[in-house]
Image (cartoon, rainbow, N blue to C red; front, side, top):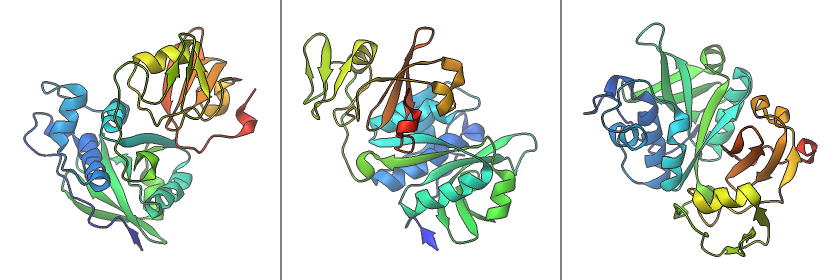
Amino acid sequence: MTSLANFPMVSQRDSDANADFDCVPASIAACMEYLTGKHYTAAEIKDAAYGAAYTGGTDAHEFVDYCAAQGVRLAPIDGSAAQLVGSIKSFIASGHPCIITEPDPYLAGWLHVCAAYECDSASITVMDPWIDQPVKKSDGQWVSQLVGNEVWMLERFGGGGVTVTVQTSGVPDGWHDDGTKLTAPNGVQVVLGFRNHVLTGRWYAANVPLEAEYHADPVLLHNASVGAGQRQIFRDCMLWWTQTKGVIQEPYIGLELDAAYKK
């Protein structure tokens, strides 16, 4: 059995007005607490992304920036249910919890999110935030119940206990900008719209480009809606540019860096 030791049980049913719908932030809170050693609640994470007055469903995409500011990468992993069961086990073995979506076992017709933190050869155990207790299901059960062909993996930047300072604008520490080209500490340059995105967005110095910008076909990366354009991979994200969409930032977890994707 592989288990993330002392993984916290976090209830979504805390003081927040949105408690009945806070399974996503509660699951993220548990994963963040495990990874950082800091205590988080569902309410504070929901409020940070949606505001204290918000009530309704929540989406993991809305928590990516908040997690990054805490030094944690929250990234989606796509695949078939059978592939994702294998991916979840692989991530847990590497010390990374995941959040998964299943049909709501408490209210028919709804969806529910839990945090996966333990597995063996035939099962995966999740922290269920509605009951803040472990729930164990067989691989076959998860294959039949995973929703959306997607799970979300969480890890500390750099794979360990790294303190990350996220800048809201300006040249990241250790980088150099000459007004046209932004050069990272590893010597790789960022230009044009990607340069402006780094300088004006939420960025941190260690998120360096892994290679120069190149022309790419988004269809190969399951993003056909953006059309062909430019792409640049960074340590913890990838940037797209197309004439119709502008600059798009997506999580990157090192699984897609392959020359076959380049055009």
